Figure 1 (tube, rainbow, N blue to C red):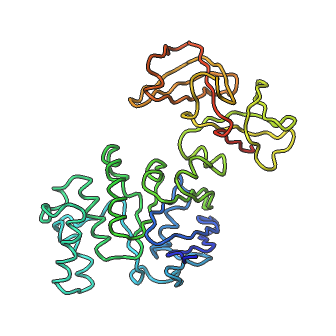
Figure 2: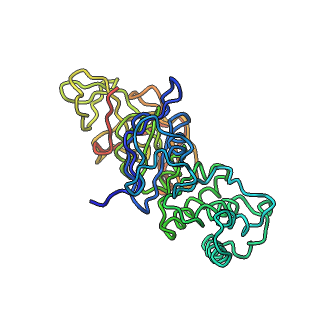
Figure 3: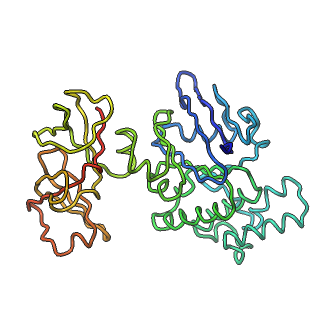
Length: 354
């Protein structure tokens, strides 16, 4: 088995009586795009700062290429950190900003020039090399900050909420741009984000953190389709939760409706559980599906490519969210107050103990 580039072994960080990171163990491969995903206070930024060397673990080891770097100073690690603010020098040109780190290392001018030119071509900003940061768009500044971090050729690049300052449309474009650059340059990226969509689009694997602990680690598809906990299911994407109980080996909703689904291990007779179903897994009509329910349409939200229905049903106190593609909704008489039947498959139903 190939050794990981980066190995975190039971990393713990305490700030007085507060445990910010709690025994996190992770292996991250070379050339992997890895995301640390969690809400505010989940420990993701503290973990990133320990990788960068700005914090020292209370317990555990951080190994890079098999070497323990837990207590190695930041400037002696082959690691670079790209800050959310980009922190570009306003009085320097694009080329000068990129060259700054190399000049601090006192590399030969010919090598600095060659590496800066290489980065300008890679980020597609060669024609703007002499511009100052205030003459660039947000996306261009982001690429300059990325180039400044990459030009030093680190083994590992850490990105702290790198797209947080961009508007929604530009953020979507830069997600793909970051993936392109990471693939082209062949450096391991670790990105910290609270944005689930950002993690799903960019990362090869995602680690979900909560209260300093690792809840789940896997590919975006694994985490979205097979969440390991109710928190993960609720945190990634949108999920409908239907309160239910186990009755004679079957799942029964609060109104007595039986729900076809696989029960989780340890869910004994009388256990209180929640059946979970993604809005896009619900379809108009119950025919051909393992489960079905009829409800009253109480609201609709048009999103261009799809239509989101809010369906009041006896299965849950909150409306059931149903996401239809434009093609599925076309030609249907959908108006508030209408009774609608939806169906879904047992294999698309996740069940979590409560």
